[in-house]
Each structure stands twice: as structure tokens, then as C-alpha cells.
Image (cartoon, rainbow, N blue to C red; front, side, top):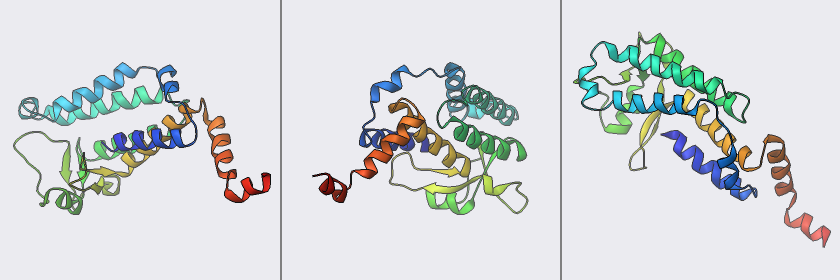
Length: 200
């Protein structure tokens, strides 16, 4: 969900630095249907009625679908920002695998989001409340985007990297490539009132 904000911010920065939105339609992302299918499957996996019926297969299916998405991202690592996205997705997968197919969530973050540090247990969920025995808890969902903000949720360091990489990809693509983005930002910074006065 954090990626939605990142893309929106990327578009705004892209416009502010004179990028072109239509450039996004021309970029070629390899295996994007694979990544989309993996994410769509996860959306089904964590919702009724599938979440209530998967039982012990839930963690296995979650790890498998997350790994599938990661592999499709790795195939595009040469695109601007994608190596940051890959790093974030890898950190998330590492935390999930280390905790048996669950993403550890900070009790404080969960409590700040929903008023209680208790997660529902009637069906499969990808999260588990972190405890003293949790492995790599610092890679779990330790941050919170609180209500009443839209898409309020808990998120991880990996999610932050995915968001940064997503914004970078959008901005760079709107400028054609990363080098043209660097030039555009430099030119924007050089257009200060003092500079314009000197030129006049």
C-alpha cells in the first residue's frame, strides 16, 4: 500500500522537474504479468473465503508467491530504481522465511493502527505479532501509516525501500532515463531567484 503513495509522489516530482507522464506508457517491464499474478494471488490468500480454508498451506503459498514476485523484479533490475525495489522485496522475503511464512509485526505498530496488539486468528493472515523469540524482527512491520489516512497499514524497512525504488523508477522514466533526471534536477536547482537576477 505504501507503493501507492510512492508512485503518486514520484509523479508529482516528475511533473515538478518537467518530466512527461506519457513516457511511463512506453517502458517495457519484463514478466510484469507474473508479478501482478503473484500480488493478486496474495490479495485472494489473505481474504475470505480462501484465508479461512488454506490452513497449514497458507505460509507455504505466501512464501512461494512472494518469491515469484521477487524473481520477476530481479529480471528488471537494470531499470531505474529496480535494484532498490529488489533489495526491499528481498528483505521482506528474508523476514517472512525466517519466521515460518509470517511477516513479524511490532505490537506497538499494530496497536497504533487498530487500537489493539492482537491480530485475528480465525483465518490465515500473513502477519504475526513479534515477540522476544522472533527472528529478524527489525525487518518486520515496525512502522505504521495511521488512520484516518487512506490505506492505513503497518509496513517494514523493505516496504520503504520498495516505495523509494518505485518513486525513483517513476521519476527517472518520466525523464527518459536516470542521467536526464540528474540533469533536470540540477537545472531546476540552478534556477534560483539570485541566478535569474544575475542572468537578467
